[in-house]
Every structure is written in structure tokens, then in C-alpha cells.
Amino acid sequence: MVDRYAELYGGFRWSVPERYNIAHACCGQWAADRNRFALYWEDESGAAAAYSFWDVQLAANRLSNALAGLGVKRGERVAIILPQRPETAIAYIAIFQMGAIALPLSHLFGPDALEYRLAHAEASVALVEPTTIANLWAVKDRVPTLRHVIGVGGGREAGVHDWEALLARAIRSFAAVDTAANDPALIIYTSGTTGAPKGALEAHRLIIGNISGFVHSHDFFPQPGDLFWSPADWAWAGGLFDALLPSWYFGIPILGYRGRFDAERAFYLLDKYGVRNSFLFPTALKLMMKAVPRPREKYSLNLRSIMSAGESVGVTVIDWAKAELGVTINEMFGQTEINYVVGNCQAGWPVRR
Image (tube, rainbow, N blue to C red; front, side):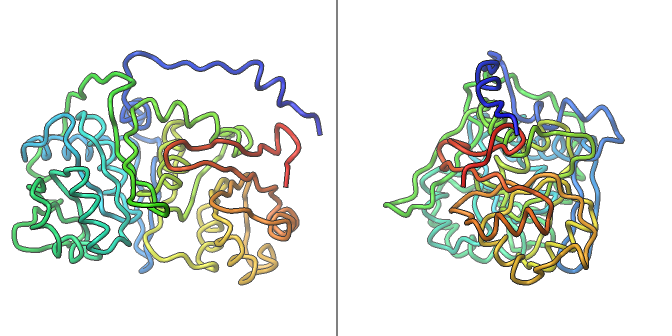
């Protein structure tokens, strides 16, 4: 193949406007087209739904107004303790457009992990669902800044605001605040493997800095017909910066799945939704290779690009993916504080293993 790295490098320029907001870049600019799909969603029970950017924007507007009614002001931290579900994505847009700061927290965190991060970030509001409310409830009295809890999907407890009721009372129009590109948008915590977890404060411009890595890791994303899916948690840098937000930045739909990772279910989702692009961590790829060594004998796959990160993929998995999935995996390496540090783009230059 022709090595285009020098050409791509030589022609690249950063372009960061003075005023910028992730909510407009990743949803608002697409919302006028009511037929433009943003999200397909399914859970372990088989329940499914689909949302256009218009749907997401209207729900985000209602949530922004509801949060403002609860006293949330610009710069306050709003914790999102939810798995992949529509309300998670809607919450990000709502928080960003009102100038508040999103605090994504894994739905797998136990009470101690939640308490540390909520208290350290001084969160004022937390969004929970039935699987996460108990762990929050165990520590909420030890987080003095936490004034309100919003329950999603039946997450109920005395004193918890119901998502549906809150949004039903809120108006659907919202005037997004004017933010600078350097204004804070979210705090995302490191894993804490070398000490206490550290909160990385990220500005709205982070999505611009992230896009070049995303585009190349998916062989010049987007291409006609692209549709994204990743099992990566939307509370993690991988799920948020390598899947949800960059897909929406280009107005491309993403598939969300609420449930534990299962190799055969992964192939089912790839087949059912005609997924073209995916971020799959090496462990997931190994499980898929072991469970279904010859997937095209059972599933109709339409994959165009796969990015993998978190650890080395290994030659065996790379060779299997090329032979059985028809895709050359692009490996990327980075960290919570700075994503996409170095990596491959097999469509632009030879892959290094």
C-alpha cells in the first residue's frame, strides 16, 4: 500500500474557534433534521428503541430546564451513574449546553469509589438507575454537596426525583449558554492504579483534539453507511471519547446496548444493526474469537473498521480479524488525560504490530 503518513501530517492543521460547546457540535447542529437518527438502543431483555437527533435535543432541553429548576448553575458538577442507555447520552448534551460540568461515573463502582469521586468533585446532582441507586444511597449522606438525585428507568427511593416526571413538567425549548472552547465541560477520573484516582478536567475543545485520532483509527471516518457500536462504558474515556461523542460529532448514529458483554450477543448486534465501525478492547476480541471462530458462517457482517486499545491486541487476534471479519484492526494507545496519543490507520499507512 501507499504510505500517506507524510502527506496527511503535512496537510494537517488545528482549527479551534474561540466559542465552542460540545452539545451543539455533537447534537444541536444535527437536530433540525428530524429524520437523522442518532441512537439505536437495545437491552438484555430485547427491548429496543430509536432516537433521532431531534428527539435527543428535545429531551436534553427538558433536562436542562429541569436541572436549572433544581438550582444547578453554570460550573456545577452533575454526576451520571448510568450504563449505556438513552438517558445517559441525553444527560451529557443537557449538562454541556447549560454550562454545567458532567461527572461520568461507572455503573459498576461500589459505594467507596462513588463516595470518593462525588465528594472530590463536589457533585450537586446525581443521575442513577435501579442497578446504581443502592450504592449511591449507601454514601449520599457523606457527600454534603449532593442536593438532588434523579432516578432513571424506575430507580426510585424516597426523595429521588423521577426522570419522566421531571421532564414532563419541563418546557422543551432551552437557550444554550455561550461557552468558550476552553471552558470546562467534564471531569473524568483516572483508574487510580498508581494512587488515588485523579480528576482530569476537560474543556469543550477536547472533542476537537480527539477527532483526528478517531478519524484515522477508523480509516477516515465517516464513510457512507457508517454506524458505530462499542461495548465500552460511556462513563469511561474509551466509550465517551472513542465512540459516543465522535460519532455524534459527525452526525452518525451509534448503537447502545445495556447489558453485560457477551461474545455471541456482540455478533448478534453487529449483524442485526449492520454495524460498520467498532471499538473493541482486546479482551472482547479474544472472547469473540474463542466463542465464534468463523463468524461469517453464522452471521452477516458488514464491518469496515475496528479500533482496539487498552492493551496490546496480539498477532493472533489481528490475523483472525483480517481473515474472519475482513478488517485490519487499528491499535491505539493513550490515557485518560490525553486520548489517542499514537496509533495505526491501515488505510493511510502500513500497520505496525
